[in-house]
Image 1 (spheres, rainbow, N blue to C red):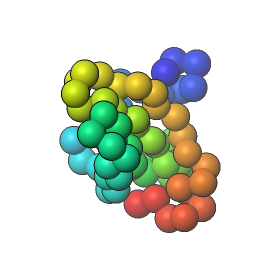
Image 2: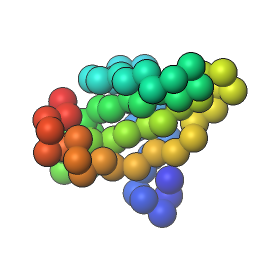
Image 3: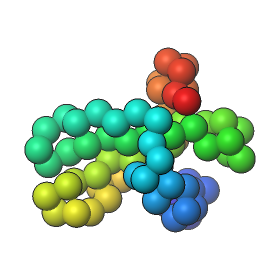
Image 4: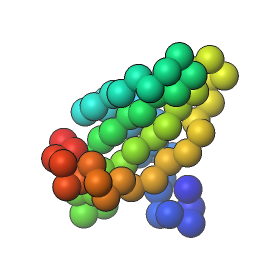
Length: 69
C-alpha cells in the first residue's frame, strides 16, 4: 500500500462506506470508492469475506473512466 500511496484509512473507509460493491464469488468481493484527496481516483479493495482478509488494493483506472463515485 505504501508503494502505491494508499493509506490504511482510505482502505477501511472504502470497506465501510463504499460507493459500489461487486460480489464475484463467496470468497471474493470488490469494493470501490472515489478518494477525493487523491485526485478523485477510484480505489479498489479486493476482500475475501471467508478468510476476513484484504487481498489487494489499488487505484483502478478503468472504474474511474466508468464513473466511480
